[in-house]
Amino acid sequence: MNHKKRDIADLELLGGRLCLDFVNTVDWRGREIPQEYLYTYQDLIAWSRHVGLIKNREAKMLKQQADLHPLEAEKVLIRAVGLRETIYRLFSSTAEGVTASSKDLAAFNKYLSTTMRQSRIIKTIDGFIWDSDGNKDELDWILNPIVRSAADLLVSGDFKRVKRCADSSCGWVFLDKSRNKSRRWCDMKDCGNRAKASRFYKRARLSQAG
Image (cartoon, rainbow, N blue to C red):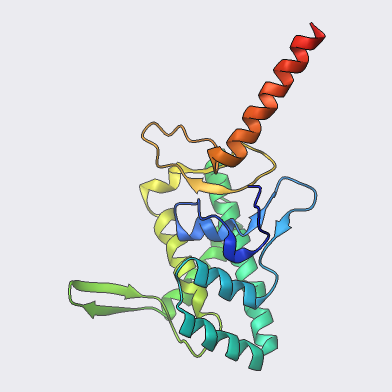
């Protein structure tokens, strides 16, 4: 993706699943120097607010906690980046049609184990739901919904629909919801149009050369 604003709170949400949007907090994975958006724990808060995982009140509480415990906030950030890259590798394998690494699956299962320990079933008016918020006194509870999203996608039939953008430099992933599974670009208006313009330019050059 070619973002107009280099801010994590402005990233387009094109993945189709929470976990895939989280993977897309890195841009231009295919280039020598990718564009990182998740630099600080504050970035993690901003992204979580952007996707609707937390409300303003929760964001404020997390910021206050992070300011009081900067070393713990740094540890959670490192854990978050590790989770993101593990999820990326798992679904990249799917996109390439190869078996996921047992090492990556084991790493993800460690994240899942922590999330499950912090989860519970709660009753609602309509029935029962998973509550994965965990202990909100801790700084890492906002990772739990991301882990749950990835786990749910991995065990569903939809995991076979995960693709990487056809622009090899982009690196964004998405769930192809098209009827004939023909989606190729994270965004046709961006990477798709850029590829289209590149093809037009090459044809023009060949025509002039001829």
